[in-house]
Amino acid sequence: MANPFANRRPRPAPTGRPALDAILTELATADIELEERVVRREEIYRGRYVVVEKDAILRSDGFQSSRDVIVHHGAVVIAPLDAAGQLLLVVQYRLAGNGAMLELPAGSLEAHDGVAEEPEATARRELEEETGYRAGKMERLGGYYSAPGFLTEYLSLFLATDLAPALRDRLGPDEDERIRLVRLHWRDAIEAIEAGIIEDSKSIAGILMLARRLEARGL
Image (tube, rainbow, N blue to C red; front, side, top):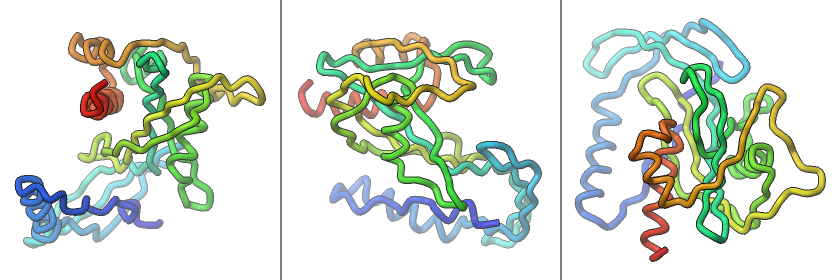
């Protein structure tokens, strides 16, 4: 099996801000001094989107242990923002969350022969499938790991603007998805996070990153 950690994104380039660059230096040092090397990998389960592994690891100080890891190709999160400043959010029932949740549109990268597709292609497809809209502009805002303690999934966040309905040859949701569309101004979305209405971590991170960007632009 290919190394599921080989596609880790490189550390960001130096920022020119002393406090942040000191953290980058600390992380680079910790990459070496705190490294955990996989010496044996056992596949426990293979599903539609994930592989569950039990990895035996050897630390740089000689300590041996094991880690339960869920391997995922990666995913995207989309913040579709219309001209009025409203976000297109979706409501889905989440079995693991025991109820319906309000979220940003999102979806997993498709993989062919073990190679994952480009995140922007995924973002455009998932936006259309889940909201019925297409974006004239798709801007990558950043990315983050959803749960690095046990999951390899890396999420790329995109801002989708210049939205227009996908009238012809529209891509619909997957057969196992039932989705409702909700419009909410991005400032109200922040309040929904603070009120505990939006509980999905990828959406919380995405909305707050978007808000920071919009506020910097004076919107």
